[in-house]
Amino acid sequence: MRKILVAMAVLSASWSCVAETVGDVSTTFKLLSPNDKVVVEVFDDPDVDGVACYLSHAKTGGYKGALGLAEDTSDAAVACRQIGPIGFKGKIAKQEEVFNARTSFLFKHVRVVRMVDSKRNTLVYLVYSDKLIDGSPKNSITAVPVLASQQIPLK
Image 1 (spheres, one colour):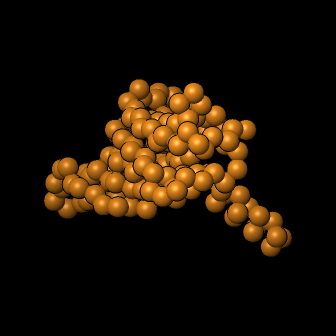
Image 2 (tube, rainbow, N blue to C red):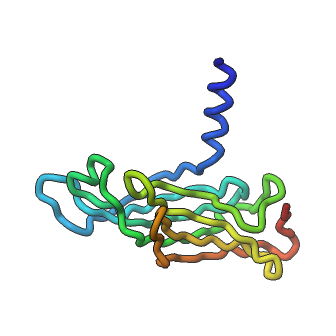
């Protein structure tokens, strides 16, 4: 039983990337409850060493926000940068989700998808918000070029 629990913990950890909060700014003042904010987080690409992505997104305050019941808006931006030598931990998919975070109590997420532009040897990152019934077309994109001498290993 213990082996099964350990295996489940390892698998669930590999399904999502963990972001660290860099900081936040308040966008509205609420007297007796948390303010609405824009939060800036950073996460490292789980399959590519040397690439970090900075993600900004809205965080709803108020009592519902404090209890985790509020639905955050679909506003988000992403900026991925090379922060060291780029190295690949193995072959990567042509398109793959590298980060997601819940932005409502049940059915809404902010997601970051990595795509590979093979012709230009570039990693492209797209952030968007989805919802079970009605997603949002709001999105942001960034790209990290890889040196021509280092081909991106595709699956």
